Image (tube, rainbow, N blue to C red; front, side, top):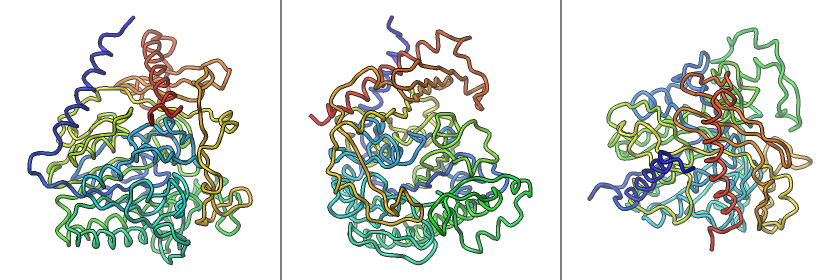
Length: 504
């Protein structure tokens, strides 16, 4: 039976998208400068403004107090590479085979940098890329994906990072990594100013991903963490060997928090520069995390789960937008929003059309002044079971997928990272497996199954039970069934994209 309310909601969404493409920015309005910032493994609760009892994040706190605070903002995936792909494309990463960390994007994808470049923006990328190698010959490096300039790393990085400029040989930069990438971003913005064109900068920090380290002044801020944290030990990477080691949680948190505070300070340095140059009013600055907090960082989260799973602790992340010219009064939004929304929102603000292919994000610009109070469509999440995919033909030659920028954490016997992506020519029933979610304005359905296995469902009322403690799948079977049907339709669309149907 067709659900008329669901059809009406989808029709409303289609109308919103159409209007956003037709309307563009206000007539005669100057397009905004745009800066996207993203923390690595930075979960929802790890900010002062979200009530963390230990962390000091005064800059993010101020942005949340004066701009748009997205209280129900999600990463498109509970891990980094897929989420970053969603930012670039406005599409769920399974559409183009970026299933988990170490999977590249596909060269045929249309990114927000491609679109803004055509709209007259100067585009730069700084920091973590993790959508393929950053070397010059890679078909998925930042330049191939639309950026004019880049100083980037294949993966994450620590103090004194080694980065590649515009695909060249890796070079070492001495200092605190967040401050380094912000300093380089500011130099790019200064050059962009000379062209009289609007700028678009993507800054993806290496912090606070483990292994952790910090400046003494930042570490000293967390010398007095509760003694009870020292009673637990966690496994993480040794900065000395690059191999796993165990350390007391208290020492781990001291370093993790120092990284977050340094990242926060570097964002403040960027905001100060924008103010001095008279650019802050018409520059949109959007900060978010790429997935939930990992196990070695969770001590205060009110949510269930962590990085890697589909509970709120795995996918709900900080989200704040500052744009004084258009967000003149502080707004705290309860609208469900996700990293896939970034592309359609920025296209609307820049007055350029979204790509003519299936998108999973929507335009959030109506939330900037509080006019959007409820999302017109559900959000889908999906950790694809890629176990069988490695038997398929590689999408990109293996040599082109070899990374060059070293990092502290070893993978096997490598201090670098290689990437992969595979053709997926046909869809079979087992392809629908994995952990998947449909998130509505009230209810959240989580379905788990392995290939060939029986599906296990959980249904949560997030308005009454944000901690996901009460599974309602058996007490509200009608809601669960409707959401399961909608989820299946969405998965089918994803799998059709995965076969490369969108590129034809």
